[in-house]
Length: 487
Image (cartoon, rainbow, N blue to C red; front, top):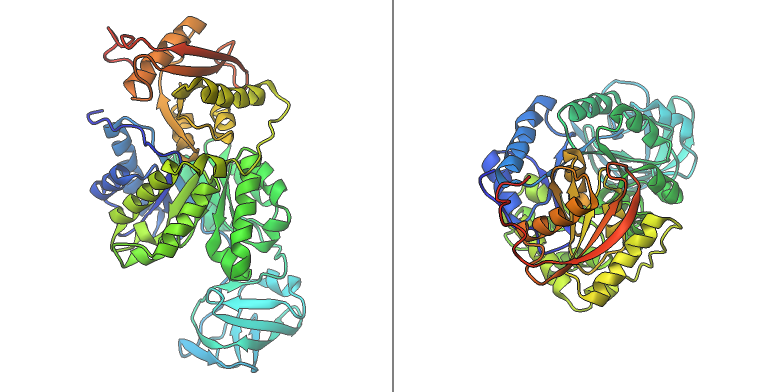
């Protein structure tokens, strides 16, 4: 480590997607310095080997800055697409009949191949087919095992391999394609921290991915299908984190329904103690412009006021003209919103009722003690990260310093609200825990001489899920004496 950087002053996390505009080590470091807390690698674009130097650059940067850094690999999922056309594109007109079939012959103005046999079995008369991100709308009039006959409701240009959405039925497709399985195995082998599963429809969709991950990464469910909303609580229960993927969600549902759904997904995720990321088109205009629209700033601010754990940049940081400025803007919005005196009250509009466990009761108590005593931080010792997640769920007014002997745990916490994770040696006794907490609070600028901090841990030590100690201590300011190179 040769360059330390202070903990973020804001509690919401910033997740930046990497791509052609931001894949070299210098730019990745610039994004981190501008405010990125975690990095998303989109497995939909490029081959696996092109991701290796990106992952290595992030890990080298992590060593350079001495801070565990989070990598999320986002799987493409079973993206539905139409086939190809003899002329490359056609023009569909409102009212005309158009057929989807299983014939691989290039299409024309009357028909095109649909290479997804599952749709033919699941589709029903009256169901909508949305093409090219919802720009074209067709309604099914009849179907059999080889043909779907539709009427064009909203016409337009349709070209080769455009995406297809089927919002009105649950398509019985495997949650993981062969590409996804290969990409997941690769990502786990490369040591990424989170795997994002696209187009989740049912809690069962998460099971295969969970089995392939084998505990080597955390699993995030992307909510972007209407079917997922119907079983939202069950899906959230089965994953480690959630993403409000507003792109496809906004295609498959009327756009006016997306804001209340966003609030519901954030509320359910928070209540169930899962980190929740709000994503897609947050600062879309910054792909080409060095400044966002006022509406975009308000959109980002709304997610922060709702208590989202993280806000995400997509093309803005991956392929836009202003990647660093986009991250800096996210950082600035987060800081401004959290300085608002009304922020704390708004974040607690979602009522968090603790589960009937000792750990949850102590997390709730820690928030109250911090408020009553004007403590400056809550310090958690944790192996698995569960203590930190319980405390963050309460959205305390003070920073959460997380000390863990597991580097994997520290890295995964990069999507968790209000936390600053430190990878450090484990402790053997209560006295050692107290002494180390004081030193780390001073070393990382979380507290200063005269401040009170709250400690949470489990005794016996090295026993995951045993949180049972809540302790308040005051710093004298000389705790770092003779501890210049401590890990």
